[in-house]
Image (tube, rainbow, N blue to C red):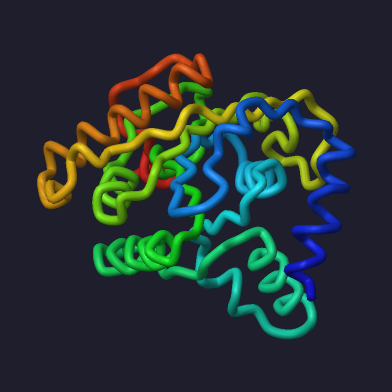
Length: 224
């Protein structure tokens, strides 16, 4: 019930309150496996994508979101499920493989899956080198990749602010990318990198961010 509330009540309410400009939604395939590959500017990005796409989109989420106890824990689990999160463990190579497998199941079933190739939010506003998970998924499943640019979402909820505030945001969906020409080559690291770089270039064109050809580290990694 809470999942339906998030998608069909909270979603339209959020669109009415924040009035995002949505461009290119007509480019999104109505059916079949699709990967939404987006830049990542804010914690609310998943909600923005969920509420502006015509399809239900699944994302990977921390397993602890789903394991809380009591009314608050159940509410959180239902809320993040409504946003499309799939619980996954993090922090190890094995966990990374499990995450890719969870994403692959969504795509193999003909669903839509959302991913942030940068791996973490961009704190400096620039677009950073993409991790090759998006390339692996596209090659392994044959899914089309729709590049997404989120513009202004970092202004919705600045660091330290608990409640989102009105801000001008834009969501741009690009032309779907088809990598069928690489069929059977998903085991090649070079091909996975080539596909990922093509996806990142498409996001770059849509977002008009400055590009940095290196991975963006999480704050805890930078301090290590």
